[in-house]
Length: 257
Image: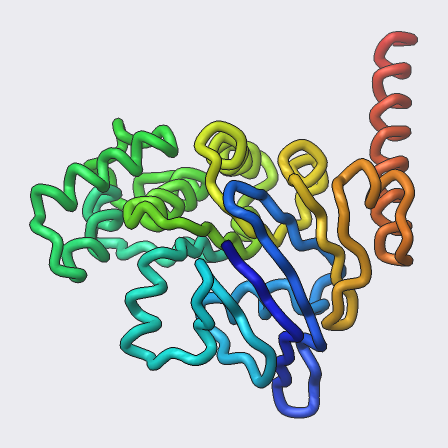
């Protein structure tokens, strides 16, 4: 489905991505994790060329997308859904109108675009909010509209760039539940950049750890987080153990009380 070979990207004197290679199979959920600034977001943004790579090759569905013209790339982007950190919704439009806008601009008849928009809103549990504008929705609901907007094109690949980063912690779960359902029950092919450890542990088929622009470790969650081979993996293992110990102590304290 997706193959990245020896990807490089620099911003001025800063190397953001250095010799990254990655394979993603159809139906697989791959989670990219690592310290802030390690190159995760830059890596997935090169996949649909929101960021132009400086070197390397990217193959999507067998086609080298680093070698195609911009007008061809616009057609490829319709097959690759992208969910951003920010919601990027148009405030004067309803949820349904936000979802169908791209379809209509692409030349789809409004009636058909409306049907696809409603089907996408149903997938994220927001069909009842079709007539509400972004200002009338919670942050979690707005992000779910953003997800529906990406799903409306029925993409073959979904890219997620820290989709819960802009949300209040109490709203994070509703977005993660949607992502989990898409991964487990709809067999979407997904590459997810996130710091959400529970999601990665529960949903990822494979974890890819990055540090300083490079892939330092990859494997199934049980391997990466239980017997890590990298310093970054070891730090995640310690974080998981700390969280588990804290939860156990909290539960014990409640029993004593």
